[in-house]
Length: 119
Image 1 (cartoon, rainbow, N blue to C red):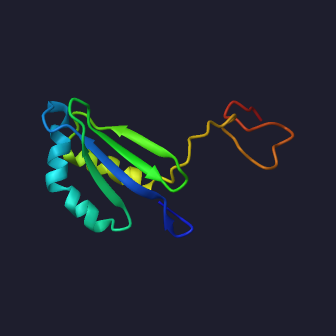
Image 2: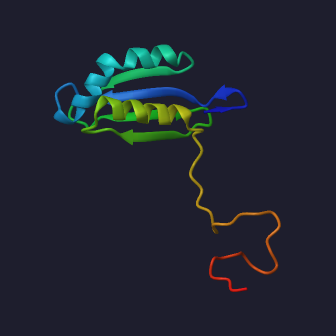
């Protein structure tokens, strides 16, 4: 996703094994879908690296120095395409857990409304 008109994902590292069965889908993705993905995302640096004996990973490095790692073992090339697009569209921010479900600048004096309220 773009923040202030700039894509936040700088580098996508595709890590796979050339021998293992869990990397079968990622190897097919590299052969068939990755060239088109690179062509449609010229702002993105895509690097493939060979890690023998390890499960396949997609690693996204963002401008704010954060990184996200997604394990794609035993996935189809279509699923891997979806995860690569999700990494590209993410802002790279850490997930922050909210303290309450209802966030507002001006909290209600009477309390939050629920469906159990009887009139």
